[in-house]
Image (cartoon, rainbow, N blue to C red; front, side, top):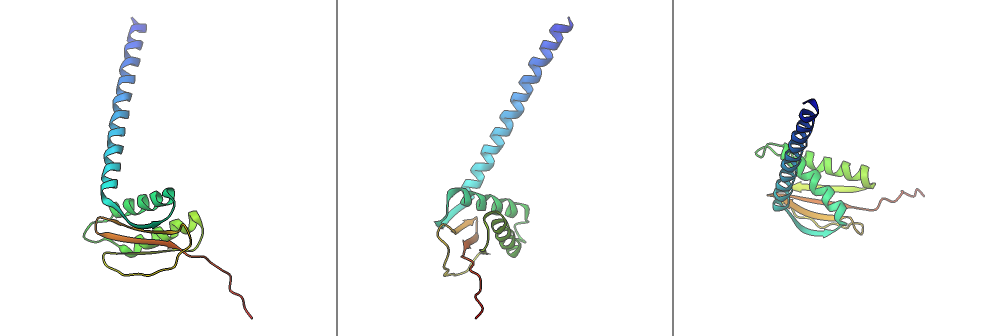
Length: 133
């Protein structure tokens, strides 16, 4: 009797684990779809993995802020620091709902995108040591 009960318990446990995993997979797919629907690339010269890193950081931070009181300076600072620490200096970030720009960037270091109505310009410039004469 005990052996049959153990097998039944194991069977039910596997079934519950598969239900939980399926639910997690569906939730991840829905979140990814929501993410993809809201991110629009406006201009880009950046590898896909860096783009995705920027999208995820920006999306997560915007998602954590109340929509009526978005702290664009905080978003710009967070993205800049994240990219400086991960990919080296010198990254620059401009965030807002309306701005113009004209920048020079390092090859492979430019991304202009929007999430809903928030526009984000992220770019890298070369850092050269100052030569004192």
